[in-house]
Each structure stands twice: as C-alpha cells, then as structure tokens.
Amino acid sequence: MQFTAKNMNEEIVNLILSWRYQAPYDFYNNENIEETRNEFLDGSYQAVFTNSGELFGFFCTGQSAQIPIAEKLGLYREQMIDVGLGIHPLYTGNGHGYTFCSFILQSIRKQKENLPFRLSVASFNKRAIHCSDS
Image 1 (spheres, one colour):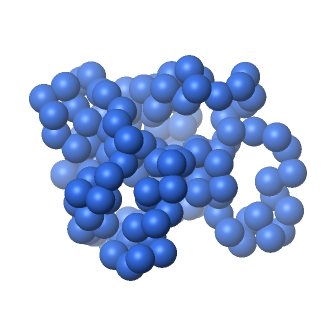
Image 2 (spheres, helix red, strand yellow):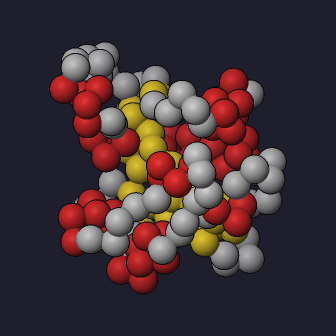
Image 3 (cartoon, one colour):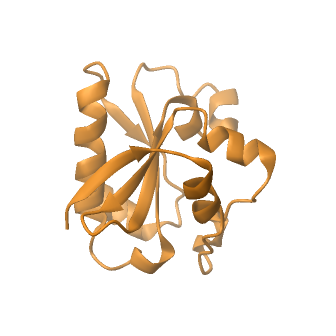
C-alpha cells in the first residue's frame, strides 16, 4: 500500500473525529469539540491517504504528539521529534502499521532537522508496541 500526506482541512478533521475504536482502543476516541478541531488544524497534523484516495490515518509532530502529564513530569527533556499518529479503525490490526509508520517517518525526515524520533505509546497498545519493535 502506498500513501500520500495532505494538509488538514475541516472536512478531514470532522471525518477523523467521527472515528470510533473498540475497547481497549476507545482510549483514542476524540471528542468533536472546538479545542480538538483547532489542534488538528494548527499545522502540526497531516492527513494520510491511500493511493486510491481513501483517508487511512493521520500524524502529528511536536507538542501535539506529547502526552501532557509526561511533559509536566519533565519526561521530554531530550531534544527529539515527537510523533503522534492514528489509523482509521477499519484499517487497524490488518498488518499495515509498519508501512504506515515508515511513510510517516520518511515524510517527517524530509521536513525536519536530523533529530531522533520519539513515539509515546500507551502500555496496553500491543499493536503499536509491536509495530515500533519492527
């Protein structure tokens, strides 16, 4: 599967905010509120589409990719590129994670300085942990 990244717009954000994951991944369900929409539109997020034009997922960098409590605890002292991502619920668990993550890292590397990447993952998220171990 091949991907392309595009800037976020209101239509894409509304689609993403309608996604609903089953437990225990419902932790990643977002509320469709103004604050969340504004964050998705602040320039730190990119939408990812398949080569057939379907919305597959998204990624973000910087503070949007950080966990607020971890930041308060001082866990982001090292200078790195923080990465956050999400995959459409229909595509999760189908073996596309490695290709998706590789595309994201290549896309970010083209735009950002040469720093190491950091992805913070909830400990229960076995799929994401498995992908990051690949």
